[in-house]
Amino acid sequence: MKGLTSIRTLGRTDLEALIDDAGEVRRSLDGDVPIERSLDGMCVANLFFEPSTRTRLSFDLAAQRLGAHVVTFFPETSSATKGESLQDTALTVSAIGADILVVRHTEEGAPQAVAEWTGKPVVNAGDGAGEHPTQALLDALTLQRHFGRLEGLRMAIVGDITHSRVAGSLVYAMPTLGLEVTLVGPDRWLPAEAPVATSTDLDAVLGEVDVVYLLRVQRERGGVIDDGYVARFGFNGTRASRLRDHAVVMHPGPMNRGVEISDHVAESPRSLVAEQVSNGVPTRIAVLRSLAVSR
Ligand code: NCD
Image 1 (cartoon, rainbow, N blue to C red):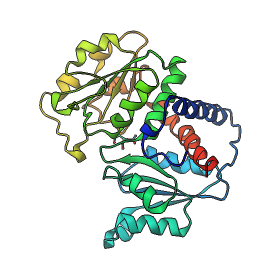
Image 2 (cartoon, protein in one colour):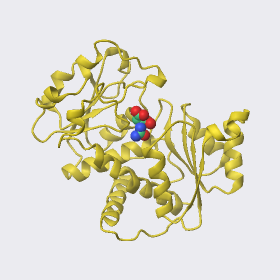
Image 3 (tube, rainbow, N blue to C red):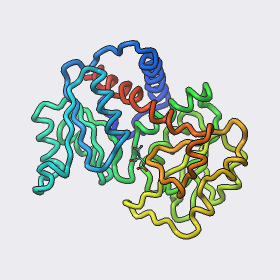
C-alpha cells in the first residue's frame, strides 16, 4: 500500500489480507512472540490536530513494536499556535525525516492533502466527518475473531451517522466484507443517499441483527442531543434484552455513558468494546508494515 487515506482504496481481498495479518499479529502479541522489526530505524510521525486516546496511543505503540522512532506533534504546543499552516507543518515534519505520517484533523480530506504535499505514505487517523479506516479494520478483526466469520453477519450502526467518520469507513468496509448493514438514527442523521438500508426505528431492527454498533453523538461537528434522543436510540438493558442471545454490542469509544450506551450495556458480557481496543495495536501494526513493504 502507498498509504491509507480512505478505506475505499481497498477491495475485499486487500481488506481480508490486512485483517488476516492483524489477526496473526494479535496472536503473536498475546503469546509474547516478538514481532519482526519491519520499520527498524524508520520514523513515524503522529500529527494529531484533534484529541485522541486510543487511536494515538495505539499508532504510537504499533510503530514502536515495529522498531520505528516515533515523533508526536501536539498542535497546542507547536507553531500551529503561531499560525503555521497544515501544509507548512506537514512539509516541516517530512523534512525532519518522517518516513510515514499518521494524520488526524478536523478537516475532511486533510490526510490526502498531506500525502500530496509530502509524497510520503499517510495513514488517516480520522478526518473531520470523513473517514477512519483503521477503526473499520480493527472492528472487522474484532468481529472475525468473535464470530469466526464476517460473511452474512447483520449489523445495525446506530446514532449520529452523518457526522461520524467511523460510520464513513464502516459503511464501505462492512458490506465489502459481506456484512449486511442497516444505518439507524433520527432522520436528520441519516444520509440522504445511503448505500445501505436505513431505519429510524431502533426497536424494529434489534431482533434481527448480530451486531449493534453504537456511535457517539459528535457535538463538536454539530450533533445535538435533543430531548427524545436517549429514549429513542439510547442502548440500555431493556433494549439489550431484546437482542438475539448471541448478538454483540460495539462502540469505537469514547463512550458517552447514559447517552448512546448505558453503563449496564457497556459492562455487559455482550460488549466487545475492550476487544476493539485490544485489536487497535495489531491492526495498526498490519497497516504500518504493509506501507513499509511497498516503499
Ligand atoms: C472515534 C473518532 O475519533 O473518530 N474515536 C476513535 O478513534 N476510536 C469516534 C468518536 O470520537 O466518536
